[in-house]
Length: 382
Image (cartoon, rainbow, N blue to C red; front, side, top):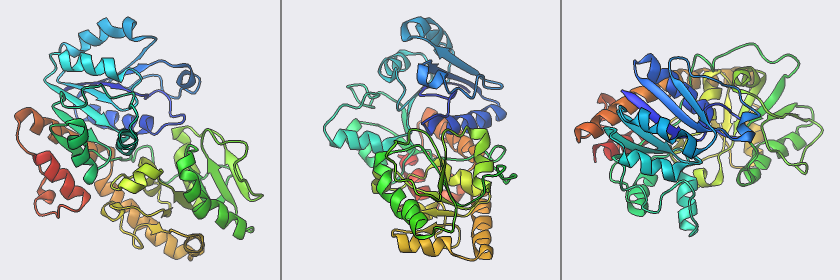
């Protein structure tokens, strides 16, 4: 297939989770023989933090304005099998119009921020990357979030066919490596600052740091404010490019995962960072949300906490126990949550949408509808 995507960014991982996910998925799709083209509006804040300039085997189109790139986009869509628009694409509305009017065999929308999308609609505001007509014109709407979100995409936005395409990890990039020199920490956290994550981050990370002054805590990420509640044993790395993520994870005895409020409330929305840390062989302490146990099994493969006391108990577990949990999580992720697995799922979903019939993989046949896999299969079959 020739897949043409109009998205947020692949060229810069600064302050967004889209870039790393697209890099892994693009590599997997290209390895599987597909042609991949990604259109990205060249904006200053990503240009200044660019850490990818080309897609090996594919094409990254950085354009200064929509009017300038329009003829080139039309030429690519003229022989495209799949035209895809994603959430937070700066030109999503005009790109949607172009995709729907194109001769592409399949017109798709990939909402990589479904909880944020639905949260905005419920609040009565406009969602900048949605056209006024909603999603009814697309042949297939993919969602980073499964479960009830898929139904809401149909009822609120008119999506005719929905399926979950979850986060993933590229194990060629994220794997056990040597720690960062001089950066050892007992507990780490990697993530862009977000106000709606702050309460959970203070519960699972900042307050444990206050109560465990003998331990070293390390944060890496962008956009942290000056009034962030730092403590003497919390250290900070500003922007950490994806190539350094594995060494960052491997520099800590345990890493914390905190989910944004809208994602946690909706559930069935695993962050790509969850799978990245697991693939690096690092034990994870996460907040709790519906559907988490469909991706990693609590206690056996991941630790969870809702209070500071529970977080401290997890951090204090013997190293041998933490190592066992980390090994089990890595095995699960490499089997079920890699970029190659998602590329195969995407192939099957696109093929089913073209044929107009349902999709299911053998392991989904008897899966309960309440699980992530069951939801994926049932929604795709519709």
